[in-house]
Amino acid sequence: MFKILLSKLKEALISVLPVTVIILILAATPIVNISGREIGIFCASAVLLILGIGLFNMGADLAMTPMGEHIGAGLTKSKKLTVLLVVCFIMGVLITIAEPDLSVLAEQVSTVMNSTLLIVMVGVGVGLFLLLAVCKIVFKKNLSMLLMFAYLALFMVCAVLLELKGEDGSMFFPLAFDSGGVTTGPITVPFLMALGLGISTTVGGKNSNENSFGLIALCSVGPMIAVLLLSATSKGELTYTLPDYSMSAVTGANFGPEVLRILLDVLKALGLIVVFFFILQFSVLKLPKRKIIQIIIGIVYTFLGLVLFLGAATVGFMPIGFEIGSQVASYNSGIMIALGFVFGAVVVLAEPAVHVLNKQVEDVTDGAVKKREMMIALALGVGLSIGLSMIRVIFGFSLLWYLVPGYIISLGLSFFVPGLYTAIAFDSGGVASGPLTSSFILPMAIGTCSALGGNVLGSAFGVVSMVAMVPLITIQVLGFKAIVSRRMRQKLTERRIFAADDEQIIYFAGDGDEE
Image (cartoon, rainbow, N blue to C red; front, side):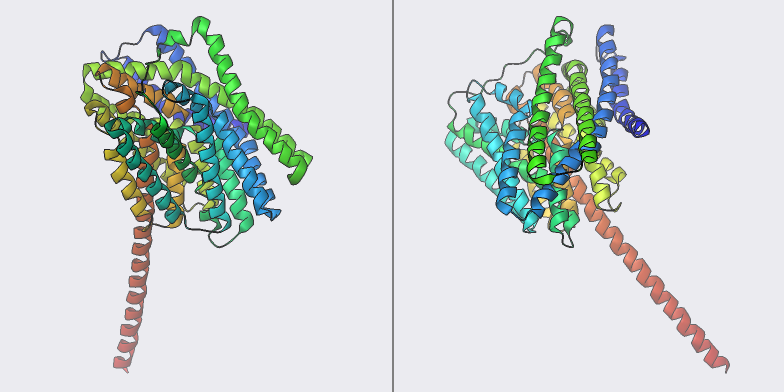
């Protein structure tokens, strides 16, 4: 187990090192002025981030993935569809309510929306769409068509909101679309992916690999619709108070309370899944003692890893992200576009759930879709999304100018590429928009927008939704490339066969002439 942990830590080092080096290089230039104390805290945070990602990935392998697979497989084997659907709905609601990022989101709009109502409605949205995703696996329905109907419903709600509130309604769009990424956090992603794999493996069928993906994709739509519906009933103007992003706000005397808050948030989020799992263990699953011990050890790894990861991101990366955004934008806003692309491409390497997804994709596809290919496609997609987001922050136009054509392209591609790539692509969108995106990229966008005097809520928010959308296109393009490559190989093989046949004909014809 120690060798496996060292391997995970090595992967985490390779993931975190690029973004750390880029930030340190920026700090050495006259463009960004960061104090020695801040650089020291940031470097310490980077070390803790590496340790956190390594422990989290270890815990995901030992606990989160097996828990999801056993629950999915065990409930499906019972052949009680009602029980399976009820359990999945309850899990969807509870896991979402427990997500720490959702509480932060609710606080931002507490002046116009009831925070508790928002959290509950988003939870119900995830629960309902998780039911839809489970039914899709059980009844082996086409994911592309379900996604088409889901996003059509989403944009219809957008149109209704514009009709009801006019131009003010568009101010809610970035917040609503960001909520889809917020609810698919590092705890829920490996659990939901494994749940889908457990159900699809038990159900069987020739496309069981493809059928196992899609839960995260569908569960991301529910929160968006929920926030838009609540926005339609809200009164007054949506206001945003800029938080204190200084490093002093989370260090010194504030460090203890901040760590305690993170501990409680992770304990609440992880605790709900664990309690629910053990209820099912004693009532339905009946797993052997050895497997339960392994899962308990994995839960400890997951807890420690997530606390270290979130603590490092909050203390070291969030303040630095805001400072880089505000200072670089003040120096030259055009540089932020290129910098956004670079940071987007390297930050996705450090998202814990991305490694879980890539590993599961490679395992499920028996190496047909390799981790390296997935990571390159995700890095390009996220880099492009942040670069485009910085353009929107600078010029302040509506998020829909990106999202509408983006989803039309991504949904259109789903009818031309293999279904497996579509399912992986839509899941990867939710996975890529993880906690480091929220705690580094979003503060960087907010810092840029504040320095340029823009509308933070209307222009800076929406970054998470862009990170969730662009990989849908890049990974499906990867699938399209796979089709073209396969067809070219087939044609080359056919030409070689025909050429060999022609040579044999000529050879035998030549023999006949000699006679």
